[in-house]
Image (tube, rainbow, N blue to C red):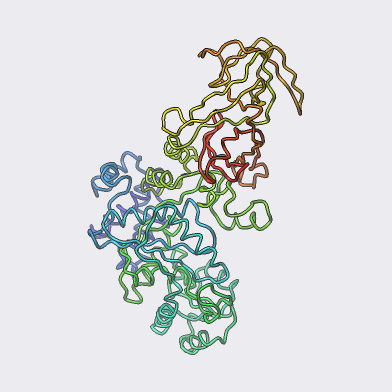
Length: 576
């Protein structure tokens, strides 16, 4: 077959873009799926088109990356000018076909757990685009599986979105439209765009893997009767499903007659027990997007191969198709966002709850001391990308540090405290500034002849060494008595003059000490296994002034790091 110029241009464009996303090597299934999504008219000739796609893919993959970029620029110049788009749209490229005042985006989380950093990325991008084009954002709960969903999770998602500063124009549930969706499902079956399948799940999986049709698909006489029985409650869960009439020979496995409706017995948080037949995401998402007026449906790259199905469902029902695009997921190394991995750890007590500071959930990041404005800036700094990369957690910390610094009081905390007795030190009241540059006031501390210093500092001292007790005076060590579980150091006060060349350490006065703990979260997973040492507790003394700070406020313990006040005698470590 010889391709006309427009078809060949489409395939080359899709192939080149895909190749540049994967270090110069395009992926066949992704190219086929995107080509079919771009040119639905080619589906009737897919068996003829696929060899041509393979031929062009081999040509593109044989080129050097520099040659691929040059060729892409020749075919479609705007595709290789992301820098200009980034400058104009703060890290986000223009939306294809967007009109000012008419853009509608949606954020559709399933209420089956607490929102995490990945949800934050999606919601922020959706809202940014809505604001960019003076449009609106819909928060839509994808609640079509009563076995997974709880009222607690709806509330948690709303609270997380509100904390991020995101303000949807509309808040709704997919379940609000359950009977509308069921009617469209029935219509799809009666129009032979789908069928009721009585096969068991093992048989379905086997036939799909082999690309073979089942007997239910070929039985045209029982369609309507089986449909009536399914919605009348004649079947039990897993006894019948509604499957899309796709293409069982398609290289895109998403098109091999996927399930669109299934029977679930469960108490739904909104619907109770009055509904048993629920749509899957593959049916509900395109229908809801079209019916809600969504113009641009953005979702993570894991759905890329399902775009062909998304569009095919809407075409069969003659409904409007939104523009669909994908971006990469966001998670950090050692901090998985998958509820499948998080829930068991909460249930078996390995984690204290969804707000455990080791987690990447929004409620945990909030408890840890991360600010919503820092999360937004971090997300936008990543721009729009399909590359599956896990940014370093330190990148988020850097944005957060800038936001915390000028608003956090500086106080002293000494971990594993060691007593330091200072000879010839007269009692004195020292005025300490709460921040070196911001106007956060000051505090007065009464100091006698004994203070506490951190064990890590004490371990480095020896007789004759000199140190500066910060904002107080210099002392010379005269004797060191350190045992594993207890210790004491003796020193002489030698000067109140600041000497820049000697070590400066924090301290806590004997009469001003407050027993204090700091929870230190570490990577939750190491080498893909749960890290049983992922939570550390640092015990010591803090200045009593810390008890004056508001609950949940941030503080910087000097030479230790930023922390968030968890209760009157405990803080959670944020970062250095």
